[in-house]
Image (cartoon, rainbow, N blue to C red; front, side):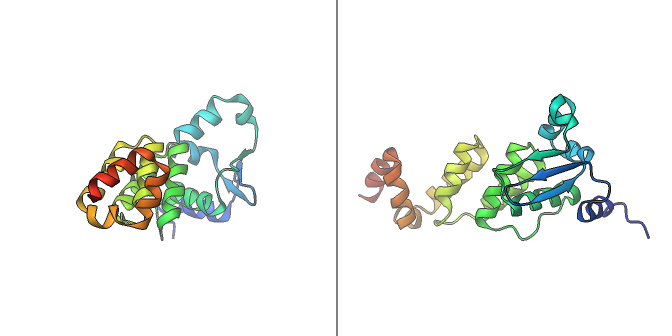
Length: 176
C-alpha cells in the first residue's frame, strides 16, 4: 500500500535516484535538490541562483557533524524530530538557522526553552544572542530572573560571568 506521507522519508532512507550529496568531513549523505529547496531558502538560492552549485552534484558541509546532518535531513524529509537532547539541539538549531529551515529552528527553540536549567542557561543565552534570536534570549533571561537563586549561585554562572566582565559586576551586586 502506498503511503504518501512516508514516501519522502523512504526516498531519503533508500537514496533512490538522489541528485545531490551533502558531504561532511566524514560522511556523504544522499539527497534531492527539489526536497531540500522546498524546505530551505538557502538551498533554493544555492541550486537556483548559484550557477556553479546548480551544476554540481555535491555540497560541502564541513562545519556540521554527521549526526546533525542526519537529523536535519530526517526532519526535511519527514517533519519528524526525535530524541533531541542538549548540545544536539543547539547544533541542530544552528544548522536550521544556517539553512533557513524556519519550522525546524522554531521546534529547536521550543525544545531549548522547555529544557532550560542552571546548567545550560549560559549556553542558551549566548546562543540566542549569537543567532539574534530575541525570543530565545528573552526566555533564557526570564528563566534566569525566575530562578535567580539557583542560577546566579551556580558554578556554571560564576564561570560564565568571569568570561563576560559586565555580568561579573551584575553578579556581585545580586549576591550582596
